[in-house]
Figure 1 (cartoon, rainbow, N blue to C red):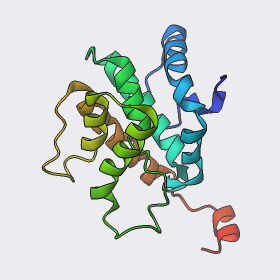
Figure 2: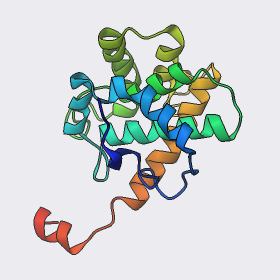
Figure 3: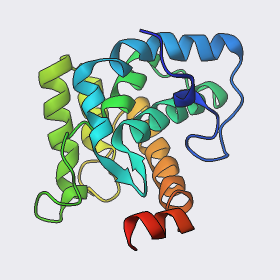
Figure 4: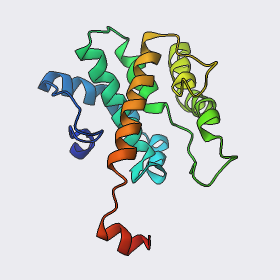
Length: 179
């Protein structure tokens, strides 16, 4: 499947992306293509994660940031498992703003891991990455692999950028949303 070019613009997770070489971008696209185009994963486009950013776009930004951190910091993580876990880390498939007991931050890693394992048969490492990505909020579920630490950091970077930069009020949002 050919991925949409806009998905991989350097600015998707803010202005802090490293410039990827053509080869790195091609590898990233190649590794992401099977999951990024899967109809089950595409359901994440229905849900807003932070500000106006969909869960799909957030997960893609976390995958890209994880890939870049691994490359630039020479961490030598297992790239396949890193990207699968990063892209599925919020595969909970519901609107967390309206569903549940307002403890989504604590519960969704287990829900996402269960959904991802059911649909994509995770490795033990991938499941661990997803289950621990909310650390330190989930104090006793601490990352235990290099890949899990990278995803945890990438998620914090992207979530912060999305929350701070994508919520800006514009005349259009005020007029069309009635804010």
